[in-house]
Amino acid sequence: MTVEVAPASVTDEDVDGYINNLIEANPAKTEITDRPIQKGDIANIDYEGKYADTGVAFEGGTAQGFDLDIGSGMFIPGFEDGLVGVNLGDTVDLDLTFPEEYGSKDLAGKKVVFTVKVNKISEKSKEPTDEWAAGLGMEGVTNLEQLKETSKKQLTEEAEATHKADVESAVIDKVIEISEYKDFPQEVLNYYLIQENQQLENYAQMYTAYGQPTTASDIVRMMMQNTAPDQSDPDAFLKNMVNEVAQQFITFAAIAKNENLAISDEDVENYLKEAFDAGSTGYSSLDELKGDVDSKTIKEGLMADKVVGFLVDNANVVEPAN
Image (cartoon, rainbow, N blue to C red):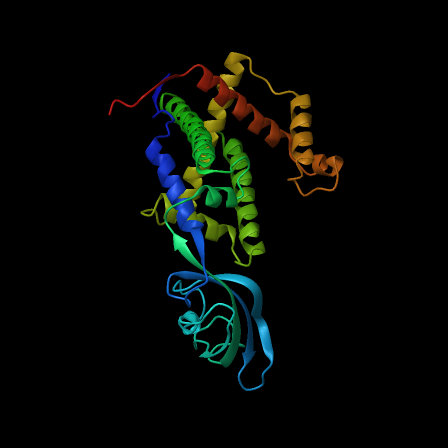
């Protein structure tokens, strides 16, 4: 098969853009000792917030050595403005009121006093230095030249990974496009429907675990909004998605049979062992993991990887005409 995929490439402009983003996120700083805080400075502060009426410190209102970008709007209205004009080493009390719509009911609309000490004042600079590059904490980076080399290497690895994924996606789409299908037996569709529903449940549990109660139906609706906003029938959307999955795996099975590609029980064993050793499964023992997985599903996934690898190895990948 011939597929068109843009090659992986990283230009000097890409590297410059990446470093500019680093500068925006972690600006180079020059310490200031001869003037008070101005907007745009970074003030390193200690602060303690107390209720104005009781003088009791409230939860989450105390910190030491905090770098605050003056003018960022990170803190409640009046906090950052109240530090403008304050000198290095000074301590000030800021009489403020939390907004009525503030997220915490205990603080919404409440009058408070923040006692703030200024430990350091720094001025942001858009001109990176070797010292700034070394301070980023990137392995092997002690100056700007090394930062450029490391950034280009990282961007190149990301571009190559993206290119690999794009080639895999292109060969899968191509082989599906040139294949002919008969109607699938209902038991085959049911098998993939069960798998898909289980995956949707897993996604829903993940969202719920992070404090956002979600159902499998909610996940389907989110997928519809992202990939098929004109679709209004969740059942039809799910049915079409299952049919596409069935097409893909049945195609893989046909290619595997024709090309004598096989996955052994030992391959499954090694896959599970590697997953367990990586510590990403959440199981306390390898035997517990083995007892809770469907080896057929694992074998099918490994077979899909092998078939896609075969297709990529034998594909003619060319650059797009335009």
